[in-house]
Length: 311
Length: 311
Image 1 (cartoon, each protein chain N blue to C red):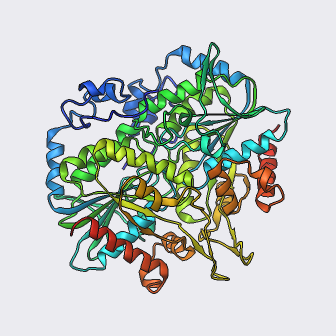
Image 2: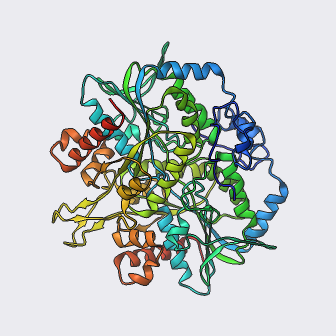
């Protein structure tokens, strides 16, 4: 079975997409050759590039598997970045069918405004803003029942029409997998000096299995990988304070996998019921639990990220 | 923002798709009207219907959010069904980009064979078989980097070409969300007397938020809902035996949500590190831990499912 894009993929944004000799046998050959993914309105690409000129670090947050804490980590990393009040930080949620950034960041129900300079994101603080399809829905329960091309269109709009202003960090939260959203964001962001991707996993093999796919995806489409974060690494029982590994690292966990792929290991975050509750309620975990081990783990994680993106 | 398919959607498989007055303003109107989703090779639909004539109960397993245990629950429910040796049971994994059924069911590395009567699924036991894109890959780490239409094609092949034989239960494990795979499976299975969908969630609002979208999706495309299961409801500390709610039901959990939507609540499953380990290693949890509370919870869950699908 031909299951992946070829080793020497010319890239979806290339003129040779679908036409290079290495495209033969690739499942995406037909769609690439059709021009559906390559022949973009050049004005749109220029629009995206202009917006991105004002963004210093453009960071994708990826995972293979769902439910490993991608959105939680994205919001927490953004909050730590934003603790430095001299920096401007934003979260762009491209999980179109399952947007959770508005709830986690405490702005569910707020509305995006449109002005002459584009869509205004919703601000959580002076220097922290968010854009999500969840902020465009009449009700948070509404389902966005869209096939790929329609999702692609919205991602394009987010990239070209949101007026972020000048940003130091733009974190892009993605859905799980290696499909439309991922190909689209790669297509649009690679020509804009994408900083790279942070890959999130939980410790068990079922999650690592999908993360290896995500790493192979990044390598095929030339997305630089900043490093790997392991979330849900252990749980501290609030009654007896003993640690349990709920998602046991039966095959060595993320640290070993990172070393096998020769990628930076950025750190481990514990499973913390106070964190899941803070995300559910949209409150700032760092305000409530600044002294917790979980808060320290995030601060250490952001230090590692900063070290790897060469501030 | 026009975010959903209209209240009186004629259905993607209908001749009126994209053309009915209620289609005006629907984001899928153009794609439905284009015929891309409706004009199927009639031979394929006949092929699917012929295969499905031999399947008594056709059950979708859905969730809004990823990582809530859809694949774990699918495999565990299948194993409980298969404990009745007079029944034939199968799992079809349509999570194309993140297939975990082969690992969880202990058949990673096995190969699908092709014969005159179609693709043979891989057998876990006498009366339990599985088909997954994971069984078609050269390596389990290979990424399937496919946009929607290609994923759609494979789902069609799975439905029309897999030689399941005669089945009592076919469980279909899906990716999270409400996009291509979900529209495709609805399109192909609704004319085949789909039994219905089991919707899986974890207790916290961030998961329920996406589940409400999934319920609205099912209602819009006329997928009957068998009921809601809450997974990861509590964790028993292996050291002190005290229960912790790691994913706290800050908004009442799945039971309350089921009652608000007037849907059956099928039960709760605890978070159990022995279960995540069994899934990682592909071993049969029921053989190893038949006396556990978790095993009992699954047996009770299957009783509830059977009661609601009118055996």
